[in-house]
Length: 116
Image 1 (tube, rainbow, N blue to C red):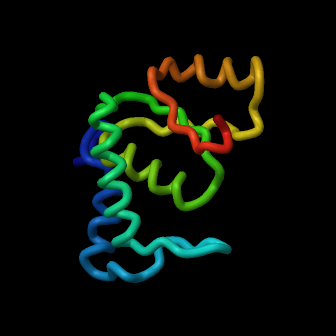
Image 2: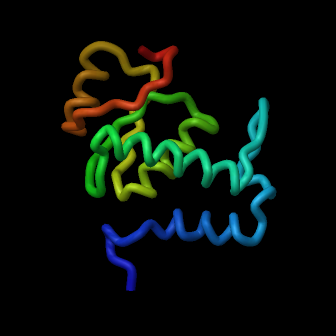
């Protein structure tokens, strides 16, 4: 039986797809695609970087990213670490943004450059 806090079922499912159909598209975008293998490799690299920043199982990590490949990679990287993903709406500004970030109590924010 899998409990919350055990290895991610989504990550396990991704690894299974990488083993059986690595080049198949996981998702397609207007400007590109992301295969199962590319997603797993990118998410593993990002998970390693986030681990070096101190992100660990049980942490909540807010993100300020547009919808697309980088956000999906971030989501899977956080799942790989057992951390929670807290996407923040990219149109939030001022007090609304401050309140959303404060609710996470996170010491780290993942943000795309246009939103800094």
